[in-house]
Image (cartoon, one colour):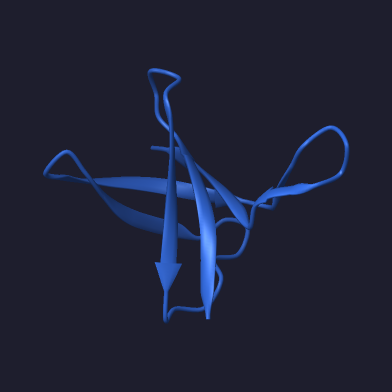
Length: 64
Protein backbone atom coordinates (compact mmCIF):
# COMPACT_ATOMS: atom_id res chain seq x y z
CA UNK A 1 0.00 0.00 0.00
CA UNK A 2 1.51 3.32 -1.07
CA UNK A 3 0.21 6.88 -1.15
CA UNK A 4 1.42 10.08 -2.79
CA UNK A 5 1.54 13.23 -0.67
CA UNK A 6 2.17 16.77 -1.90
CA UNK A 7 3.89 19.07 0.62
CA UNK A 8 3.50 22.84 0.29
CA UNK A 9 6.20 24.67 2.23
CA UNK A 10 5.81 28.09 3.89
CA UNK A 11 7.92 29.65 1.11
CA UNK A 12 5.50 28.29 -1.52
CA UNK A 13 7.75 25.53 -2.84
CA UNK A 14 6.18 22.11 -3.48
CA UNK A 15 7.60 18.61 -2.96
CA UNK A 16 6.08 15.21 -3.58
CA UNK A 17 6.52 12.19 -1.31
CA UNK A 18 5.49 8.56 -1.58
CA UNK A 19 4.49 6.92 1.71
CA UNK A 20 4.91 3.14 1.92
CA UNK A 21 3.37 0.60 4.33
CA UNK A 22 1.35 3.19 6.26
CA UNK A 23 -2.36 4.01 6.22
CA UNK A 24 -3.39 6.96 4.09
CA UNK A 25 -3.24 10.23 6.11
CA UNK A 26 -6.66 11.75 6.81
CA UNK A 27 -7.77 15.39 6.91
CA UNK A 28 -6.31 17.09 9.97
CA UNK A 29 -3.57 14.50 10.58
CA UNK A 30 -0.10 15.82 11.40
CA UNK A 31 2.77 14.17 9.52
CA UNK A 32 6.53 14.54 9.88
CA UNK A 33 8.56 14.49 6.65
CA UNK A 34 12.36 14.52 6.15
CA UNK A 35 13.48 17.51 4.09
CA UNK A 36 17.10 18.56 3.57
CA UNK A 37 18.24 16.76 6.72
CA UNK A 38 15.49 18.27 8.90
CA UNK A 39 12.13 16.94 10.03
CA UNK A 40 9.24 19.15 8.94
CA UNK A 41 5.75 18.89 10.48
CA UNK A 42 2.76 19.42 8.22
CA UNK A 43 -1.03 19.27 8.45
CA UNK A 44 -2.82 17.06 5.90
CA UNK A 45 -5.79 18.08 3.73
CA UNK A 46 -7.79 15.97 1.29
CA UNK A 47 -6.83 14.70 -2.18
CA UNK A 48 -5.30 17.04 -4.78
CA UNK A 49 -6.94 17.06 -8.20
CA UNK A 50 -6.03 18.82 -11.43
CA UNK A 51 -8.67 21.08 -13.01
CA UNK A 52 -9.61 18.31 -15.47
CA UNK A 53 -10.41 15.96 -12.55
CA UNK A 54 -7.29 13.75 -12.65
CA UNK A 55 -5.91 12.80 -9.22
CA UNK A 56 -2.56 14.52 -8.67
CA UNK A 57 -1.86 13.26 -5.14
CA UNK A 58 -3.70 11.28 -2.45
CA UNK A 59 -3.28 14.18 -0.02
CA UNK A 60 -1.78 17.62 0.43
CA UNK A 61 0.20 18.68 3.50
CA UNK A 62 0.82 22.30 4.52
CA UNK A 63 3.93 23.06 6.54
CA UNK A 64 3.17 24.17 10.10
